[in-house]
Length: 171
Ligand code: ASP
Image (cartoon, rainbow, N blue to C red):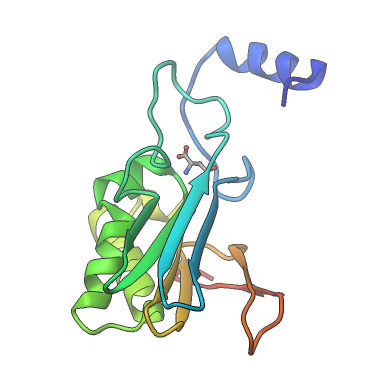
């Protein structure tokens, strides 16, 4: 936010410019939405104000199709939040949709994508947050994150507007 306090904190950070995102402290704020309409068409959207204190010129995962968002109207849709670099490295949302194409449920697909990050970055994955949210063509959904604290909202005929906390790899 463009407040005096945040400007002061940013100027303080500029003294070292260390890029060290901390899970669930520099709150991730990508808003990802996946939806299935009455005609069974899938859609999705995501936005972000990006990571706090990011490096100059950094491109996050939100503007990259397949990273923070991917929709295939034949299979499903997925979105993510968290440290964009790690989502980009596994082309996360595309991976989740492809895992659903292979027969995994949205929940299993999110868990497998998170496990891929852990496998690729065993140490780093303990210190960062990444969460995935997925929805398939049948309206089934799932979510999973590296760390606790990833919440998502569901709005459907069965679940009229409820917030859930996703299960996580680390507890
Ligand atoms: N995914 C975003 C990024 O890396 C951060 C966030 O979740 O807000 O830019």
